[in-house]
Image (cartoon, rainbow, N blue to C red; front, side):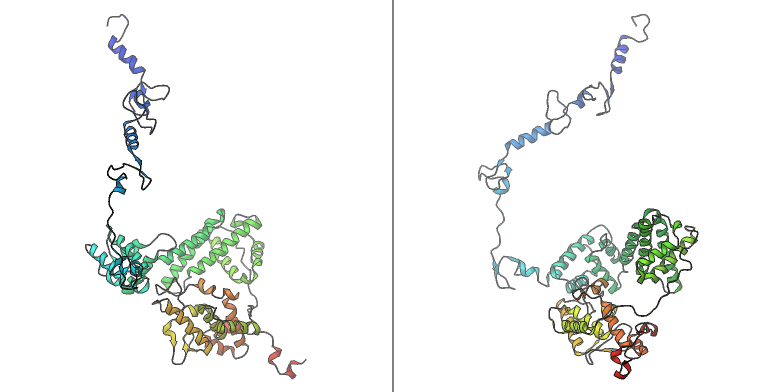
Length: 530
């Protein structure tokens, strides 16, 4: 050191002074002099004005990749044929794609199916005929089997299963979807293929439904839990619709009902169905909304008898069912210490058990009979349901489960539900049944049921309850009203016990339709006069 009082030499002093002027650059992370304009070092401050990328060379404003792209874009010109920018060829004056010759099309030939002069598609047929040819799914299945290293043994039978239940185009689409499942890295075991074919959401897809029906029919896999998933989604939807402060108790009540159902199944008793549980959750949800909107209460502990009575008074016809469910819920809540007192304790839902439903007059019955027997505009399913309900007291469940094997053509009778004896049909009802069978034949289905819809023609399920409930919408009448009319007329005409035995009902159920007054039109004149 050449100076007195210094601790460092001139080289170290210069190095420390330069180090003090540096800071960590946020762009590159190195210790460099940061420019106050950009808060970055000199190298990181040079950015391309086009893409914002770094520039390595001093004095440039555009990076090298952008310069190269600009040079290539300047060399392009608009093609006079396709009107797109490209590199024009000197020989043709067009761009590259337009200058390359396309493969020639095969000349049109006579189609072996329709006999018209068209472009050839496959097997000597035009594209329109080949799309509808019944051998197309089998050709697609053979192509898939040849592409697989180890094709599964059930592939050929499944292709035949699809070809018999779907049109060729839909069957080929399902086989193409199946090909993606069989060509991936997962095993091709039937149960694994069935699980991977399911779509998320409410519907698991047409391919998954076909695979489930085929595998379960041949004993290759177990059925999926799609119904349980849908039921769980419906329960969760009702729980989520409950107001927030009351939702925890409703969710616990649902879990308790599911636990009790599992216990009933193990014990061999009658467990609750999904529909019963969903109905109970619906009633509790409606009570929660009623308490929040009209009573200003958001806690189950604040509910009293007056609240329950006001809620039941809104729909008096459903008082018995609602009170039963609410009693179950509040007993559960009291055991869980959610409420201190059960507000439904001591309440009664006893009422007159006589028939309170609506029935049709003779004029209305005649009009409906003419519509379903002589009007060709009525749908075959509507005519069959209406005539069987108004003449034979058939319920929607009995007609849903009616199969072709239950029809006896020798004596023109059918077997309905749990009725102990076959039901003979009159000529009008038999003609309506034949119309429904003809309509079923047009759908080319293997479904054993008489009522086959567009959603059930590819499998063996019965028609849905929603479809049956809306069959009589053109008439504006509920299906239960027709059956009630017939039962009320029979019970008040003949012995109710005979009616119960013929319909497979309990005597108590038939006695409900017994009227508590006399019809003066059925009495002799000397007895009808006061």
